[in-house]
Image (tube, rainbow, N blue to C red; front, side, top):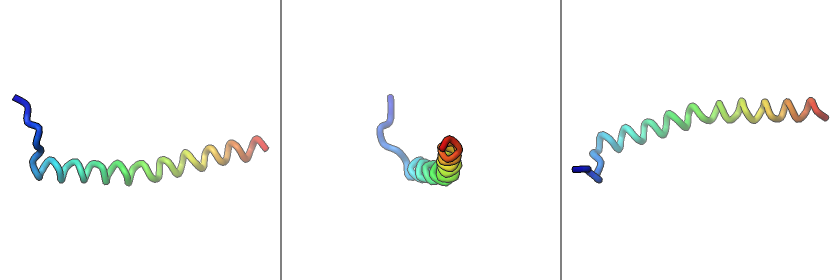
Length: 44
């Protein structure tokens, strides 16, 4: 039998995971964006 409802602990864990992913993805996206800009600037 599968539960469809989530416990408050699971909700808290998911929110913390999303927050952690956000904090990790922001610098990664920044680095990727600056790399693309650098490559494009070098081609001009």
